[in-house]
Every structure is written in C-alpha cells, then in structure tokens.
Image 1 (cartoon, rainbow, N blue to C red):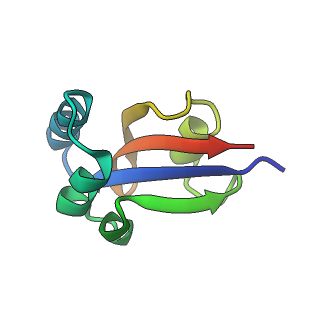
Image 2: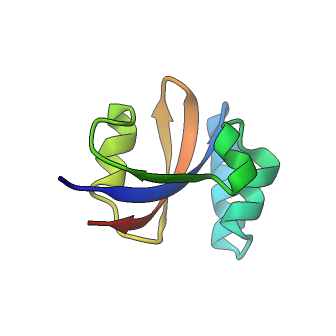
Length: 92
C-alpha cells in the first residue's frame, strides 16, 4: 500500500492561501508560515501531518498528495475545511 508524508497550511480564504504560497516561493520557510498562519492543530508542528495512506485524508487532499511532485508547494487545494497549501515530503 502506498504511503506518503506531507505537511500543509490550512486557511479559510483563497486569497490568503495564495499570498502565503507566494511568500514561500520567495523564500519564506514553510514551517514558520504554518506555525504563524495555519488553523489546523498541525500548524504548531510546522504543518507536519506525518505518514498516512490513501483514504485517510479527504479526497481532494489525497489526489494531490499521491500524484504531486515531491518537495514542491501545491495549492490552493479547496476542501470542506478551507484552503490548503500542501507539500509532499516523501512517498513510497
């Protein structure tokens, strides 16, 4: 079974999500941005979600995590929870 490790930033506004993505692309640290802005409890850990398999996260999340290039910020990804920036850190 496939497994992936990822980190994310969750916000409730697409414009804010795009702004944070731009900051990261310009050199801001993903983990620092997650700690400052993510509304998910994982934010305090730099957005780290640990390792998980397909079906353990919402469908929109899974589609990105199990297909996107590693170590590249993806998003915004809209789910029922809000807007996510995702970074897949490993996949097996």
